[in-house]
Length: 235
Image (cartoon, rainbow, N blue to C red):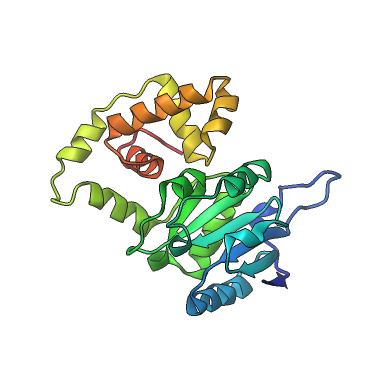
């Protein structure tokens, strides 16, 4: 494991104050990418960002034991296996936000999808898009990069027929389903949604299942993308 302090300042975070009135601008990140070329590329992008970062580079999620309250940037190739139970608990307790760098050839395991606060397509990766993704995730917005959103929507309708999107525009979500979908889009877990809405976690899971069925989506991420594309969800 290595670490690097990069001292830049992010203008968009000027109003985000820590207790006592001082600016909390030093974002903590852990980067897990085994491909050396890609890791060096992102390291170079970090240097060009007008943002102050403390970045740790590790090769295994098991090395996260000392990391707290920051962002985890992970390659989809490191997210093809289920999230270990102890790591899932750590992500929840330590409020770690997860940004997954997605390669078109890889499939992210569902448990990682459920913990993700955003997805950035390698095809979209540039300093400005990396910066935008980090800011979105840090401020609680669910991030989906444009290339991934287009590919996800296209994958749902490979024949190019607009019947699917027409069908989506006719879908009606209840007020509760809208609430749950919006909180999911903001990156909250089922447990956090349950607490926010004062309902049971089982009730959240059931509502998510109904949403997935209505939108004909295999997971929460695509449901958010489809809902945004069809106008059912406006962030």
